Amino acid sequence: MARPDTPVNLAEKLEKLEKLDAYWTPKTVMEVNGLELKVSRFKGEFVWHSHAEGDELFLVLRGTLTIELRDRDAVRLGPGEMFVVPKGVEHRPVTPEGCDVVLLDPEGALNTGDAGGALTRDAEWL
Amino acid sequence: MARPDTPVNLAEKLEKLEKLDAYWTPKTVMEVNGLELKVSRFKGEFVWHSHAEGDELFLVLRGTLTIELRDRDAVRLGPGEMFVVPKGVEHRPVTPEGCDVVLLDPEGALNTGDAGGALTRDAEWL
Image (spheres, helix red, strand yellow):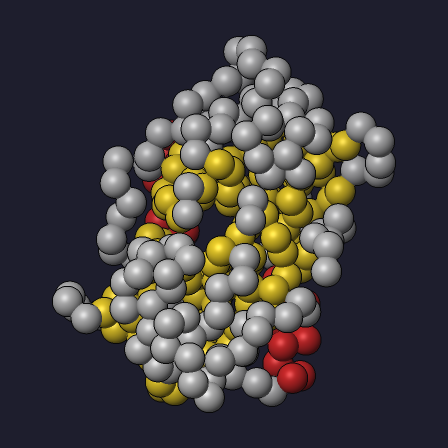
């Protein structure tokens, strides 16, 4: 899909996403300079993975997200907080209570990165 | 400055920015895939300009922002709404009441783009 040339409302997109009732299924809502801005709902534990394509930004809108990392303490994000996992760095998102997030990835990056597996999703436009 | 490897809290950054009491002075708070994520406070009318380096994303956190464009109706953004001005497209941000925004630009992009002038600011890290 082409980039929308009208305003994109994050709350409306998250409402649409909630109706799909799907966790760990990022949907693209904007494209900027070759990156895709996505919204997703997370709940539970994801798989350890890394992204060879580039850095991944996480911005939490609701709830709390823990990003586990191999060689350092986990990072804990609340609403309005963000963190960038650098290209190639293994990480695992964990959120027992669930959270809503904005992600920013290079175009074509898959949610499970190098790990693949059953939770892999193509990021379709929402 | 190197990209922070700890969480960045947008509300805290905006509080710091408020103490500087400066409008139209974007400050960088994160770097991701060669783009700089900035926060800024806008108030009044900016200058018409465009960015040759790439697209520019605007996400409004507080208040209302109008983005005037040459060949189409202006775009009006409220809190939680975003819009991308494509590379090279002339635009002018206008906000009589003021607003807080997040910007995403290619590294090194100046706030006044091709226009230059008295309002030009280097985006320093906050």
